[in-house]
Image (cartoon, rainbow, N blue to C red; front, side, top):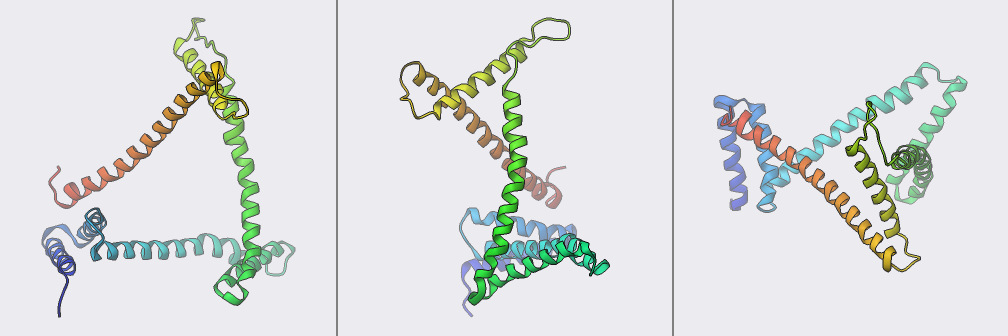
Amino acid sequence: MNLRPSTILVLVVSAILFVLSANSYGFALTLAAFFTLGIFSFLYKDNPMYKFCEAVFVGISAGYWFVSLYYQNLLAKLIDPLVADPVGSGAIPYYVVAILGIMMLMRLVPSIGWISRWPLSVIVGATAGLWFITYLQSNAMLQLQNTIMPIQEYAADGSLNWYQSIGNLTVMIGTITGVIYFFFSKEHKGAFGTSAKVGIWFLMITFGASFGYTVMSRMSLLIGRMDFLFGDWLQLIL
């Protein structure tokens, strides 16, 4: 039997990890390290070890969420209420939801898959209406409220709070110039064009800060995995 080098590498790494776990570290800890290294191996190139770890991760995640959603949603919010009161007037909405759920499963049958469009449209419409109100209150109205701030802020002793005042002024300038940048009905020339350029700077700083925050959050995940490998697993970090 001819084995490819990548397959031999997976077998060797698996054997080493099994020996380590049997000697001192524990099977569960070493298994976690194996899957961590398997995912990291994709940084070199796609390989069977990575594909195996990815498949295990996807399978376990799918199984976990299936069981979790069954007990938290389907059983608790549909089956149990219908079992408790199957013929009462309060059971009508549950039957409607159950019918829509069954119609959604018709997607699995190609000949009548068009039936699944009806419950899907209900979900999209209801979700859009619900989140429209939520985002209108949390994003639009709250953002407008935080934008309309007095330029001069005073401390409790009556002195001018320069830090807060400069912050409010910066927010006002950034908001106005950012809106001007997206106003394309007038050519960006003169003072109007200068304001639009200032708006670009505010937008770029905002996007850069957001991207930097995302990168730092991912770096924290990487640091956590490195701490696990060199600390918990290999015991190199005390």
